[in-house]
Length: 386
Image (cartoon, rainbow, N blue to C red; front, side, top):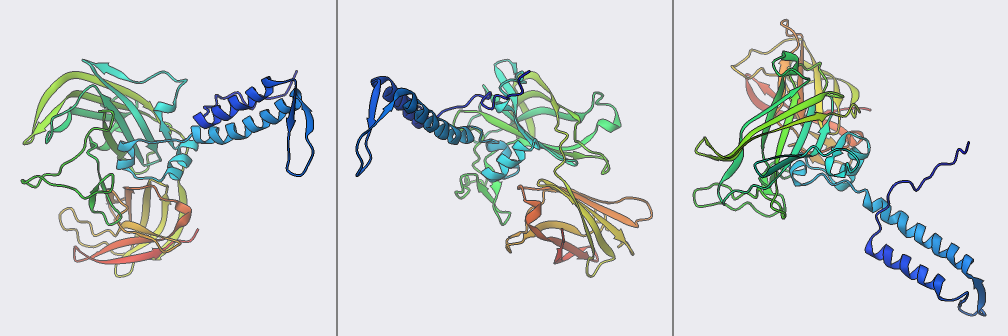
């Protein structure tokens, strides 16, 4: 039995330049039985077609290899990159490690697109870790007039098979992607970097459709139980009735249901890092963190719990990071959750998703917001060692 493997079994998409070079090589092979190749300051040397073919093959392989690398570039699309921003290199890395999945690249898998009354919805990109899942769905066949806000009458997200089971519940937020993203200072800007324009009434001019006329609905979901994990789970997403919102009321334009079953990756991208650092001016000690490129869980021990003021528990909040090269990302966190793990309030936690992908190995410190007498008063930097 042969143990040889066909290393070229995958399809290779050749660029126009590569195809041109390939055709030129074969034309040279077919021209004559014997060809001459001249080199400066040397005499012409005879080479037979088989030798030329071998040389041409090497040239083709070289340029094809370069093109093949370019052909597998993973592009998350505007909705996902607006939900959690990432460089091209970061998109490539997370997709290759199966932390992110780009459904348009899954040529061999059955399409999950659902069409109802002329509107097609399909998953575009999904990114997951233990605590958070980010999902983007592409919508085609529907558009809205200027100044109108598109949306669904109902969006339901749950894990498992029984939506009524408490173990199926998730914390979820979702919206149509409007082309607005936060910059490095947390200020909203248009995705192309231009300033946000406003109407006379002060509302933002947003851009719901892409150049092809498609829209995207973006979802961020997190676990209800902080000890739960999304990895390897099945996520159900249900959309009902598509239309617009006006003054808080929904106006249906396309009635229908679009339901999806998304199998989440079971690949963990998280690192457990021991910190053991007392948060100055508080009764909290940051014991350790569990951090991935898209979210963090912070574990505190508590010597003295502060007095609660309505929804403010007084628990320190990680708001951003400092990288090893000195770069500060102070507005990294999406709204997350803070709480105590038990009634004795001897331990506390924070979980939060990120607004952009980060390289965990490049993080030198955490930017932490503390409070005094229920007022946020101080920002600290807590170093972490890996």
